[in-house]
Image 1 (cartoon, helix red, strand yellow):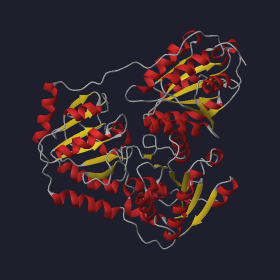
Image 2 (cartoon, helix red, strand yellow; image 1 turned 45 degrees about the vertical axis):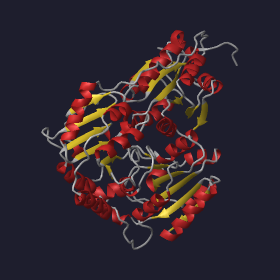
Image 3 (cartoon, one colour; image 1 turned 45 degrees about the horizontal axis):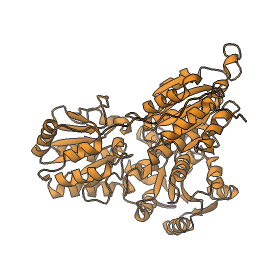
Image 4 (tube, one colour; image 1 turned 120 degrees about the vertical axis):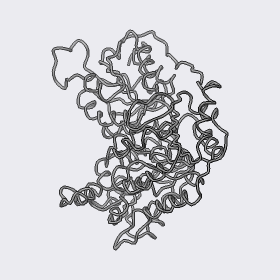
Length: 537
């Protein structure tokens, strides 16, 4: 134990000044000083069971709180294992500060055990990566945080040699800069309002940029003032309560739903893009509308991509932009055009009657019918996730947490843990395919250790259903997609969790209600029939 203030203390104090509350990771001797400093600065360290899961927890904690979160992997294999999760944070637009361990500087250039270039590895998976300067630790940490939080947010790496972290430092913590909101001047606002006023059938598309920093309320006012219906990306679900009359649901990855979506996009005479990040979309959205279609794009800053035409652009404080443009003649969409779209999507994602087991759509409908605005939900990658995004109706922004940039399997359970820790109290429901849960079984131990009120719903079909579906559509025989799975309810009990197996909708409803009511960490092993995916996707 050192009695002197170290560079690690300067790092941790600056992280705390920027609002960081959690650090996730697995310790090695090279990061022990960093963990000590974080905990003494009031940043809670959570011991994970794998480095990718630690990164997913950090990602979810940022998505729930909007505050930077910290990932602390040890040197060599620790950082190498974490890279997939760090790359995920880059594509999910999450401000994760990676404090990577490194060998002591006196060994560099000579010692080779567990040694490779950490900064070179992390550079393509982060917004910025550099080795710690122990003489400027607070200053460099503030720089890293400023980069991580700048639009679009993303991860950064400070590579911290063990002796640099322990170096004596007299630096004080640095705080984030104060920034005034930027909005349109009168001339620019009038220009944008004229574009809006000219449209009879405007359609809004909201994405990842719309779910943070107080956007939901002014967005609702903007849409209601113009009578403008809204389609949201998967991560933006709930930015407008999906029970609202102007909500048309979500878009992004389902070819069947997108076929209907493109019809209503074509029928619109103005598209208003609101924080609409194309990183969530499948390649069918390339050139999704002609350059001749009027488009007004509103966002926090430029998002250069050229995936589709963005028309007239306005950047700044998104809530202020929306407030400045609220008001005008209501849209004149034919009532039957909107209702027809809704009914077609409802028909696509309706529950079928399976020969055995549960309908996945029926399962999601049961959850959707029960969800409250303060609940958090996570969903993993696979056929079930695409269906869930159209069958689950969200009531609040960011309510359904998922990996929809990198689309990383094994994400939902650690994300649920990060969400439950970051905002304790309300239930968290993690909906996971059996193949995905097999990638993150160790996280059941973390869930048990912290007694988190998470209900894990395993969609158990003993197959990688999405890949199997794609093979069928390519007229290929199924290969490498079927497997023998365990009894997840029994595994749960081995971890000290409640576990139950269900094979009917009635039994699922009963088990789910009991799990929510109890507040105890629970795994529901739901045997599902995947055949309906073929019609839904």
